[in-house]
Length: 105
Image (tube, rainbow, N blue to C red; front, side, top):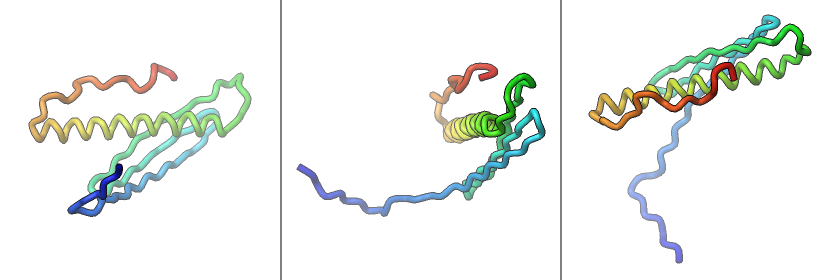
């Protein structure tokens, strides 16, 4: 049986703007992410380097650099949330977050 949902407040909808910039300078690809939350602006960077013996497929460098920059952005967001929780007196925030990737992944 379903019940009608009673809510005193309409659902909150927020929009965050994320811009991803990629630049290539063979054999390096650099990714820069700018996230605007409306309240804060966060920025992350990452890069990928093609082995000189590998085929030149720029798409792969783009994917690696962008993926690494997104992971770095995730870490920034988790750190910001932990800092906000600590500022509010929370005591159970993680002191060392779980690694999101292995070294040189």
